[in-house]
Every structure is written in structure tokens, then in C-alpha cells.
Image (cartoon, rainbow, N blue to C red; front, side, top):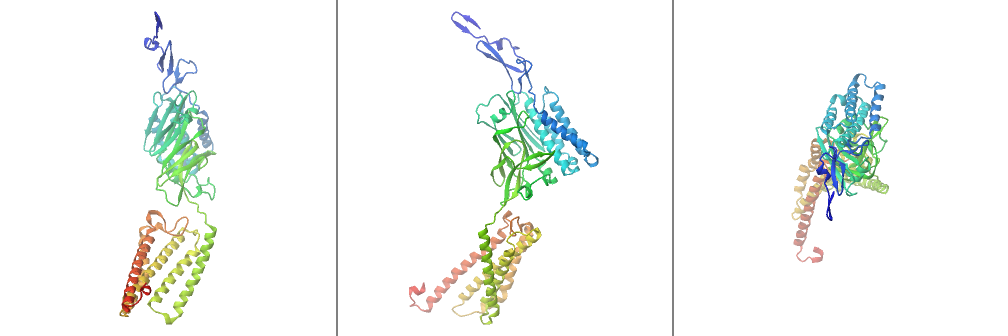
Length: 530
């Protein structure tokens, strides 16, 4: 700068000397001086602070681990015969990683890296050609390799803060973070397909070295079907636990931050995953990650919690980053011991009373008429339904037997309501003919409608229900109707209709009785009328 009498004027060295800083740094003028700042995607060189370079990635341990897995498979002879496709897979994966980590000054393309791994995911001969353990190891290596290659691409792509790439088998979004976060609470949201990852900015920068870090989010559209088809978690889950009976119900996603080193997050990362199929009412959503042990992988819930779930999405909060998914497990229902005792005692007493009623209606000929015949059929159906229900309080081990029991219960309980409907109809017809004491209509009613309707109507409903939804009988918890697709209305619909009709019959019967009794004696008192 130079002085003019009593004033000083700053000289802009950056504008005066355009080449003052090297091409990668940006020249920033200051009062009386200047300094060179590396552009996004570069860090000061360790050899010359005035120069900038692409940051090195501290991923040698992870990279060596992948190579060690490949060596172990080669030494064990797993590539002989049918597993030759897996040898090609590991060689292709190593070639991608070697080109990624080979030259630290090479500018990488997220598109090229993604397309290479997309080709591997689309290789049907690879995933169909090996046994469960071969595929499991290949999935483990693939997940780790895509994470490392995506981080390397993000960290070495100068001047590109955000990158994304979507193919038919995977979608990737990366976010480059330079310097300090403007606010500690700032959260980055990365999206891939229909899934999202929320991660704090200071989590990314805290895991970085030399002031540069990256966040990567990957979603796989076909990997969940590969894992489910090969049942990769079978044998690695606790017996009798929730995971043992669970099934995969989301895309597999991966998240990574920093510069490639594994870290424990100071603040949890949140993932929102879309369900492949609508969550059932009797299912519980479990957030799990792909845990690597002894060169294999299996799902584990450690460190992950389902914060919120609905029929279509689950939000997971995890204190570490890896590959994640949502498993659907049957809800564990703890039976109430007092309620069980009440059920057994109440049903036993009901069965005893029903048996006495049945014997009474059968043996006492003096009271036989249409009304007692209806009572007898109702008691028989209710007795059989209660007896069958009592003998299978807990679901049977056979799925077919459970479905048969559910069908029989459906039929018997519907038959009970059918005979209740006939009781109401018979009472209404009897009262309607009370003035003329005419029971011929009731007798004709018995002959024409009683048995065909009482046993035929529930059989028709069950037959139609079984034809429309044969899988609707029997659930994981009870031998009864499934709650899916509104199948319960095959029982509730007819029952509600019969209850409404019988209420109507009851109201009409009371009205007819009131008018009939009033007409017998006009001087009857209001009290007796009521």
C-alpha cells in the first residue's frame, strides 16, 4: 500500500498480480496483505503450504480388509467350479477400488463409479451361482466397497459440493463439507430414491482430517431381494428372538461420513426408509444394520432404534454408520394370566350350561315346538364353537390345521347368529299373528326356512370368503381371521346386519304387543300398559 499525505490506500495484490496464487488456491486480499485459500475440494499441501492438493483418504485399513477377504476365499478354494462368478466379482471390485485409491491426484467421477457397481448388482449369474455364505461375503464386500469408493469420489471431486447419481440398481448422493459449520445444530439431508439420511454437519467435520469431510448416502433397489432370496441371515440370529421370524421390508441403505475412517457418532444419524409392503397391524418394525463378523454379515439391531413407524415408512435413529434396513417381525403378545383363568372358567361354565340346555330340549318332549327347536340348534352351534375355541387358546403348530380351525370357528359363530336371526323372525311372526291365534305361518316358516338358512347361509359366506382370500384364515398369533385386506368383515358384516335386523324385529314386536294388549281392555291403567 502507499501513503498520500495523511491517508493510506490499500493495494489489491490479487488483482495486480493475477498469478499470485497457484491455479487451485483462491487469492483473498486483506488490508495491507493477501493470503491464498484452497478452493472447495482441495486442502493445503503437506509439502508446500502455498499449494493445494486433493486430500488423501485414510481408508487403508478398510481397503486392506477387503483384500484380505478376497485372499481368504482364494486360499479356501471357494472359486472352484460353480463359484467362478464370485472370483470375477472380487476381481472386478478390487479393480474399481485400485483405480479409486491408486492415484491420490486423480479426479474421480461418481457416474463411472456408480455404473461399475451397478453392473455388478445386475449380474444375475453372480447372485444365483453361489451358496448362502458365498453370497453373504460378496454382499459384505460390496457394501464396504461402494461406501469407500463414494467417499473417495466426493473428497476428490473439486468444486462440487453436492453430487448425485441414480441407476436402476442403486442411487448415491454425496455432500462435501469444508471448514467449520456455521451452526453446530445444522443438519444435512441426503436423499436416494425414496429414502433419506439426516446427519449433523459437525458430525461430518468432526470425523474429517485437515478440515475436509464428506457425507455419503446410498440406497440399493435390488439388494434387499438378493438378501431375502438367499436368506443370508438364517443361522446367525438368536433362536426364539424377534429377528428369527422377521423378514426384510425396505431397501438396503448405506451411510458414511468423514474421510473413510470408522467412527462412533457423537450425535445419532436418522434414516427414513420406505416399506416395500404395507406394514401389517400385527407386525413390529425393527431397525437393523449389516453386522460384519468373520467375513460374513447378518442383521443386528445394536445401536439402532425405530423412532417412528406407520404403514408406509419407518424412521430409524442409529449411533453409528453402516448399512441399514427395516425388518418386520411378528408382535410379541404377552397373555394375561388372570384373563386366561377367566376365559377357561367362563367357557367351562358356559359349556356345562349349554349341555344341560341341549339335554332339556332333547329329552323333554312336552315342550317341543318351533321355538324350542330354534333354541336347540342355537345351543348346539354355540356349544361346538366354544368347545373348539377352548381347545385351541394358543395357535397350533401346523399352519394348515390352524387355517382349518379358523374356518370352522368362522362357520360355527356365523351359524349362531343365523339361528339368532331365525329366533327373532319367529318371535316377530308369532306376535304378529297373536290377535287371531294363527300359528300356521310359523309352522310353514319352520319347514321352509329354518334348517336351509340356519346352516346354509354361514356355509355360503365361508365358501365365498375362502375363495376370495384363502390365506385369510389363521394368523401368527391366533387361529382366527386375518386382519389384512379387511378380511374380518367376512364375519363382522353378516353379524352387524343380523344384529340390526333383530333390533328392528324387537322394536316391532314391542309395538305390536303394546297395541294388542291395549285393544284387549281399553280401561287398562297406564302403569300396566307400561
